[in-house]
Length: 165
Image (tube, rainbow, N blue to C red; front, side):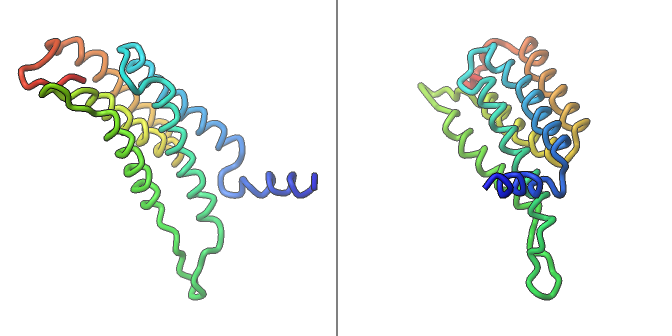
């Protein structure tokens, strides 16, 4: 039994080595954690943990997709039947479901739309990190934090249309 378990772990990292997978998962957590910390600081419904989990899930989808891509899923003619773009579609659809539950309308006002958008972006950060695009993910995280911190400071407390982040 012990040899079976060890064999399973050794066979798990054929396309993306363990240390690379660990780095990518950690980076996804840290980068989304920065975004989530800002939302947490503003006492929004989706904060640190939610953003980190969304990003981690997105990163894991890409890593699993890479591993699945290394498996021979041919149809006998040599044509591969794995589409990495479906990973992005799955993450986007899943995060959209979460976001829909966070955004509410009450008394003619929309609440938590910025938090919903930041969750959506955390999914994109996780996808980028999982694909090995750490610099792109870090750049996007920096831009998002600038938008959330700087632009919010420049905005009026509540606009006339009744939208509240």
